[in-house]
Structures are given as C-alpha cells and as structure tokens.
Image 1 (tube, helix red, strand yellow):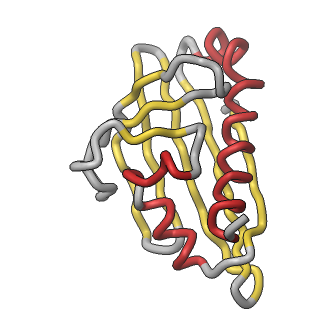
Image 2 (cartoon, one colour):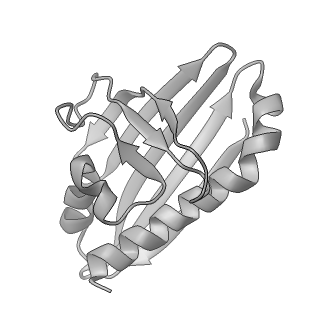
Length: 144
C-alpha cells in the first residue's frame, strides 16, 4: 500500500500538541496544509467532518469530508477519505520522547483501483504538505 510519512520532534508536552491539533477552527493561525470548512463539527470518533487541503501554498484547496475512525486523546487521531476507486487514511500520532518533548508523526496511506494513477500526480506535493504541516506545528507550539 503506497504511503507518505512525516515526523518531527517538538519541544512541548503531548497535551499541548494534542489541543493544537484538535482546535481545527484555529488551524488558520499556523497550518497552510489542512483547513477547517466547518468549525461546528469538532473531531469526534464516528463523525464526518468537512476539511480541505492545499498541497502547495499557491494551489487551490481540495475539499474532502473525512470520517473520523479513531480518536485516542493525546495519542492518535485517524480519519479515512474515500472517492470512487480511491481511499486515503490519515494518521496523526504523538509519542512522548522526553520530558516536555514529543514526536509528532503524520502518515497517509492510499488504496483503491485508481491509487497509482492519482498518486503519480500527488505524491511529491502531498509529501511536501505533510512536512510543511509538521514544521508549522512545531513553530507554532514552540512559539517561534
């Protein structure tokens, strides 16, 4: 299964990073990759939320409505997005690596009949988006 991956260590406790990720209505303050389209729909396991993404900063946003499949406080947030012949799974994971130091991991895996067709267009740009979001989260949480 094709996948993308980004990780970064952040000088902050898991609780601070977790709260920053859950406050999707404030993503515009720091996040240029993912955007909240409906702040009235908080992350909740089993819920469908309305988001959009911008792989490259100058690109038009792509809207999607992921289904939250796992929400384990301060550990993991996972959602699945589908389109005919295509499935994308995002996983955000937090790991304590020291006192007030957390490893942030963002993985995305793809499956479905048309995956290889879409992935040839998306892979590099999507990977840049994952890395950009990790860096922006670090900068925001650490106060730079």
